[in-house]
Image (cartoon, rainbow, N blue to C red; front, side):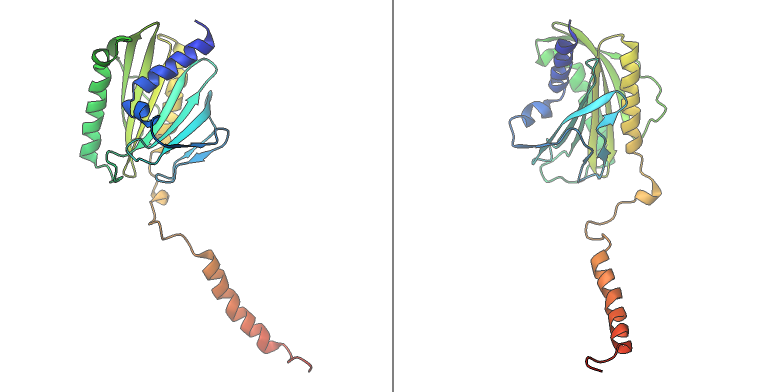
Length: 235
């Protein structure tokens, strides 16, 4: 199988593995530039154009928060990596910890039951999850997916971040140790982004420093003092 054909296959299968993506393609979406950093306005996460061997190739943002935002990365070996940022209801209510755990279990079972829903997928089995240098706040699972005309290994990483679900799906050729390593590095990089640091505590939307007002307030007294010290016009 050629690299291009394998790339298309893995990315199509990655879409099949997320029902929200299939539905989202039917919705109104807004494309964002690929070859520059992307900042998600809801989580303030910054997705660089390059992560390890992966190039960001597309960002799709849907108005419906259940479908949310999809940031797609690919590399030259045909490995496909998608990051999904979404909510569990159309009102974009913050996802709670117990909702997150339930959603992870449902997502895991949904992947294992894919052969019942898609004739192209013949079998799904769970694989051992490797240790990560940066585990982050999320849950991880790894699968072997036997499909037509080929098979793939796929990693699921799901985390709860600032009231949103952040899901990673990375798919690559079975038993490809190099790509498995790069997939792991990609997950570690994104997982590290999801670790809250004390100085990164979220501020209310209306709490941004009012630099213009502050500057104006400082400049006004200074102007008055200068006027007092200056001679009157015509003196």
